[in-house]
Image 1 (spheres, helix red, strand yellow):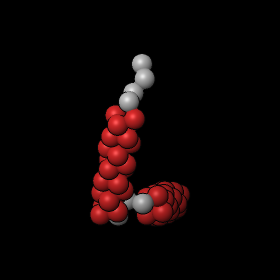
Image 2 (cartoon, rainbow, N blue to C red; image 1 turned 30 degrees about the vertical axis):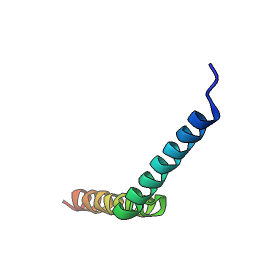
Image 3 (tube, helix red, strand yellow; image 1 turned 45 degrees about the vertical axis):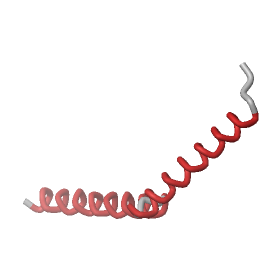
Length: 61
């Protein structure tokens, strides 16, 4: 089934508007790939330190 040029252009504009709205929402929340990676790294390093500390405490007792 073939679309008319007007329908195709309308679909294009709607998709462009949807992507722009998604981009603006992610910028407002601050959820960029870099901030997510930074947050995950911080959580991982904190958990890693907690595991090392609890292991040392257990060995010393």
